[in-house]
Length: 199
Image 1 (cartoon, rainbow, N blue to C red):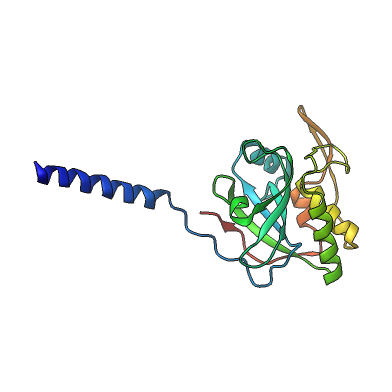
Image 2 (tube, rainbow, N blue to C red; image 1 turned 135 degrees about the vertical axis):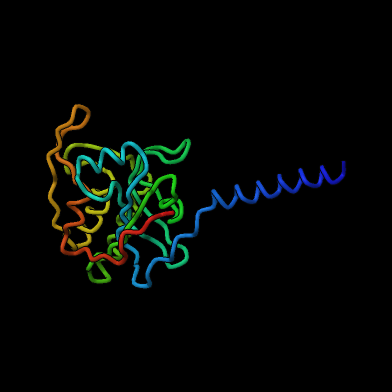
């Protein structure tokens, strides 16, 4: 009887350990040492809206945020529909781990913005001041969503990313939008990483 209980307990412990291994995700590699506040981190999202953005855009990514903070404590400032219960659709500051969590991202890539240090500081300060501002998906250059947030931050700093807005005509969405692939075509962006999976 005792040996049967021990065997049952052993199976339960082993199952729990194996389950933990099956669901554990390896830590993300650290960002390269050249990474700096103001750089742009693009992600390929997991949600239906992410797939819609990619379908309309024809690109690799559905979302972008601005890197802030410092090595070991990187955060991402981004304009997004709510990703936490009780959080409004807004410009928010999240940890890098949260931004790239496998529940939200399949893959990502980091790009450096070529600009002088003063412009970099101004871009980050301007973007940080927008924290809490409502997310607005307007079909003009007046909307506040992921791409327009980072584009405007750099534009007001004196570094024009020279983007082009795309005319979108869908039953639920119409107007001129700044899509991720347009941002990526900027001559000021230089890839710091390859396309990396989050799992």
